[in-house]
Image: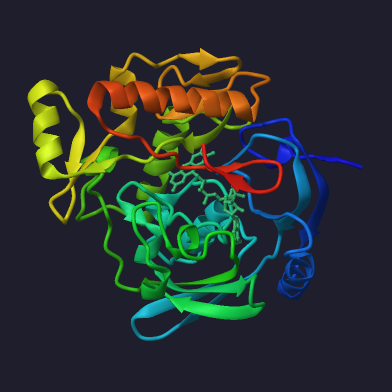
Length: 336
Ligand SMILES: Cc1cc2nc3c(=O)[nH]c(=O)nc-3n(C[C@H](O)[C@H](O)[C@H](O)COP(=O)(O)OP(=O)(O)OC[C@H]3O[C@@H](n4cnc5c(N)ncnc54)[C@H](O)[C@@H]3O)c2cc1C
């Protein structure tokens, strides 16, 4: 009996899977994955906020619902050992309520803690890797339970070893964060710049981030979406200078290595694509970086729309946009 995935993906795409298993303990998670791997298609699912289903999934979906947050500390740091199925925003709130400060810039990012290392989630000037101590995962092909240090995870901008060498080979079971007791607010980004660094509290940053996100991003419960659909492209300074000559209003941020991160939303908007739609899949009217499901969009329509955007932006700016969410076909991940 096929099982609906509509409620399990924030795009609200109406696809089914052959079987759905919800696991609530780490032991069950490991046993379930070991018994299914290589016998049938296997998809690990957290909050479904970074996925596009293009077809019914002809395999088993394992929904991680493991819970638990264990806090220890030493003179300088808090250590939080968190199970993969905890909600990311719940963790941010837990920290705030327990006077552990640092995660507040990443408030309201949907999804699970276990998915956070995969694309090294980030927002408002802070990325997950800033506080990541260790990631524990089941390596599916060897059945080993391994622990990687921050360095071993090879974090980058929306990137990690779990999207590269270990793509679709690792089931993240638990994450340990290391958060300094000596809190330093990060106010470098956008609306946070107006807060006073000498008096600001973590709660004020949390509230500011939540307010801005609620006003800027469409609520997936109202309008299906997966947040930013494209990564902000990072280009060499010569490419940046050339583009700036043609487009004096170009929105870009210099990186530590001298490269420039271009605002993908600006590139899409300048390509005249705000509101553009394929079927019920559309570029959001206000946020060009967000693709939305107006009602009955299919994953195929979303991908067609994304391909069109990539091609138009490439023609105008000679910059190739890369897709941020994972595209899931009938038996596993596919390229757009
Ligand atoms: C409104 C909105 C706003 C967003 N804003 C941001 C933002 O500001 N910054 C940001 O970085 N992201 C943002 N995102 C994207 C999303 O929240 C993150 O990518 C999040 O980490 C996805 O978590 P998830 O549990 O929903 O993953 P899912 O969508 O369930 O899964 C995503 C991928 O990870 C795999 N996966 C999930 N859990 C595990 C696990 N435990 N082990 C191995 N593989 C796993 C899945 O198989 C899939 O390939 C936003 C999304 C939405 C809808």
